[in-house]
Image 1 (cartoon, rainbow, N blue to C red):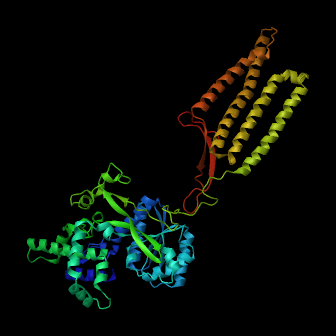
Image 2 (cartoon, one colour):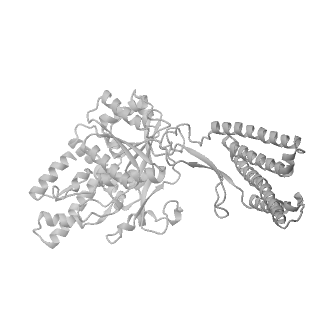
Image 3 (spheres, rainbow, N blue to C red):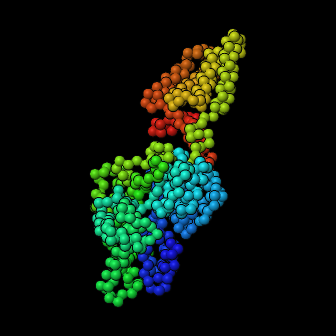
Length: 571
């Protein structure tokens, strides 16, 4: 990017069109500084959108850590990730590594990363920073089963020092790389790739071609077998596309004006479209950047095998213009055929309707550091564990108080029975006192049943405790207050007869009709409720207390009735 920066500025000042195949920095968006700059490689803003999309859609990430080299590429990529993550509601923590980092500096940056607690990390490295930082990360237990690292496309340009470096091998095992698609597995069978490899082989897969390449690259021992083994990298394809784009733009500009200017050539370039590695290539009419939907990205899995690291493509991105259906999860036979898909985007497409999704390749599974296809958690466990923790201390205190109340109620009932013939107790009428004792006794049992939900009874046990509590509280309340109502009615009748100067005897059975009427009504409601849809015990989060990741760490449990049957909450 630094070399392209100078060339692009010089080109803008000297009327020279600059088309890059490898410079992806976001700084080239500035039209005033780079008026004649275009590129066939997607910008880092597209890269960042893809990596954030993968973490959000496939891993349900809410927090991302970004460890990046402090050079123009790393800074631009990290800032683009922050922007894309902000649009997607993901929190990002950025930690920089010096370009020429030492072990001490790398240790300091990794300690800062460790303090964030984030388990999903994007690594934006050059060769030096990766070979120093990742073995240290392994030593500090920032890799392995509890972490997932995703590297950017710069990973494929890094020469790894694996020999006698088991920490680096362990650190990279089970990680991923998100980069533009390349290789036979993904591109073979497409028109552009097959044509490119065919022409490449006809030029260089012979003695004359290999000797020519060797003369141009004297520092590398290029044998014919080595040339045949190597697949074209993505930069080769983007370079080829850049040449094709300039040639087509020159032809179009010449057709309009044989003495075309640099501005006319650039204008023609921005309107150019042709078949490229991923299908039709289109450019932004303002910036000259390649449109995101005309490129293809893949997520590669890095696995250690017999002392070497192997990468294999597992996912690739797709766009769909169907706004009414979810692309993710569709059956294979409803997807575009590969050739149709790669050529389905035209200059007339409404880009606002495009939706990005990720497609897992057939019979491929992403293998993480623990050897399974289950990703680690995005964040560390909640303090005290992820399970809801009941407050048993308060429950024990409540049980003790309830026990005292039950003893007190029994004492009152026994006292009433032993003094039932005294004038005071007879005037109060023992039967109503017994009913009051029975009602309060049952109400206290309801508190005991409610307190039992704080213990490890299991879901079924807590649900049962909810219904028992409902029955006891309802019946206890009804018995206690029915006694008071009946007593009030009896007194009312006596006082009414007294005004007429008549003697009247009102027996308890005369006023117990109200008691049995209320009791039968409550029993009918309780039996129906229990049979149709009983109470459930649910845990809920308190909104007032959160940890550093915004997760609720305080909980409470309650018995809740179905909302369509009742609106009362029993706690």
